[in-house]
Image 1 (tube, rainbow, N blue to C red):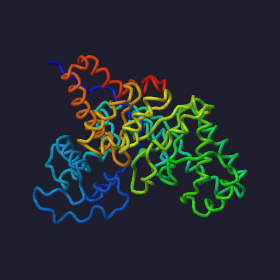
Image 2 (tube, rainbow, N blue to C red):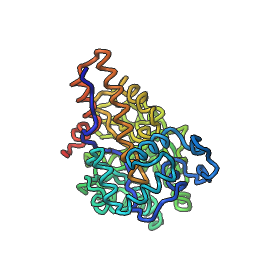
Image 3 (cartoon, rainbow, N blue to C red):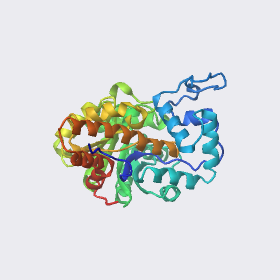
Length: 385
Ligand SMILES: [Zn+2]
């Protein structure tokens, strides 16, 4: 029987971060740290005591799958010393190494969040380094920090904040704004309350990572308004993230009342990470609101084999044209590369199971695979590759 085959299909990664050109050799422990969502370096320590066949302490299925894939790609033993040695050798020309990895999985474009790492990497330099198309989302939080350092009064801060967001949204390569409010005060955003926000401004100036919920809620609404005016996308971090996320308030369901408001009826929203582990809630939201979309970054590839279960669950409710491929890769090009590989191997299984159940023929299943990999991006963002 004919099967769905996604290898070689064009790929656009709708959520990832740029990485620095790393010319110095990496150590095995350093490489493992680069692969982890933990922000605590002690998650990975000495590897010298590890016995034959024992997984590296702290490593999970994602790391296992990546190391196995890299040993096959680099043609070396599946141990961290050999793998890191081989990638250090091959990545001496870092740009050529990166481009070869991206071409291996036909990764052609990406929407990137230049808010991490800081200080920001230049978009054009990064585009040249990888030889793919790169679009940008502009994060609101670094702008809030920058302006709070320059302006004493809340009135000045907020009017400049709005103006700068409007200017960012005018740039052709900027497809929208992004907020990481889920890392600071949570997604239970309330209505604009100017006097409450004004009162918190002093606290924010002293500690720009403080929760200051009413101030952040206010800035969130302004960003939503600016995206609506400019007809560009509001990207909202939802679900888990690195070790700092406010997990109890990271579910996308907190946002539903806001999205339903009349003034945001036409606002285009992109739920970054599809709310994992609340991806079913995200799937429900995109199934009832015409301008809200989701990606499956972070849950792919970091749940490894879990991507099969997740894609099956997401499509219990989500319309086929509302879900986009993403990786949230953030440190080394191997992450972007393995993101595509893990996604394809898992989603093919799901699509083929639909064909086996006679829900659809193989051609339609193939088309749905292509929708998630690049067609939905082209349509939703109105950009042709
Ligand atoms: Zn991210």
